[in-house]
Length: 336
Image (tube, rainbow, N blue to C red; front, top):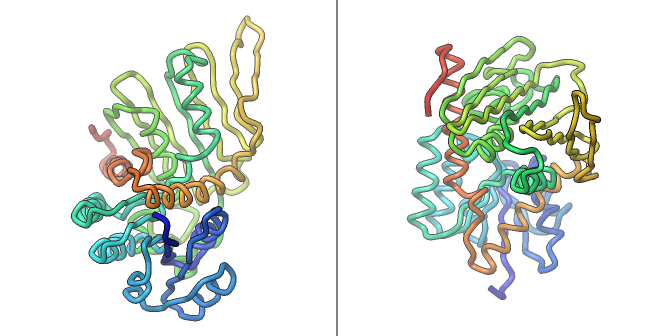
């Protein structure tokens, strides 16, 4: 595809800004247009990142080849379905939707349109994650037996009325469907054959309608267990996030100061090897920019979206999130 692509970024918040940066880093530039319910906000983004601002979504997507949805979760399904009906390619921020049923409608609309769908899960492009994939494949830690992931934060801005994230109707959940979806995605990436999900939710620190803290355990049929701890209501937590993958012969540890392979221990001298010196959080944000650039290349070359970030994978993540919600509500493990 030689003609310049036009990308409509629908949603002029923090994610919209990072996506715009990703497009502006492309060697082959795209034309950007911005849609916000506030014309002033759309114009502000257009001035800052280059392009044109719209308040009318239908008019904005009419001029676009790609629609990039960075709006609230409740807008993902209607915006995506309208874009697909107009024959557009769609990339969206995670999660794909608020429910599995909404995910199904998005995927069906994409299939009917014959255009591309990508859910921009930035951890799929995170250097630590890619290095962990390779280390496991090389057998650096033997057989993986346990994964631990934790991100415990205090988000004081999540007060009722102050943030859309405090509104269950907009989010479809609490911390798990939002921050936690990244780690559910990684659990699914490494636990390839999930058997059951068990979860406990807490709601003690914030005014948001959904849970502010979630603990999830996922078992797969090959004997691997993943545990996830995420919170927006934990004050003075340790320096996080972090990921640890324990195996029969070693452990992979992803921290903010790099990715390390630990071997030995016990009666054997502990050996630590740095596999990546990149800091976790800068690479986290870079993963978003890589994602949008990847999608543009898929459209330009008419290539399939990578399976790690296609609609079907995003739907599987949503299934696991909803299984965790049922487990937390009923107090029992949910079999997959």
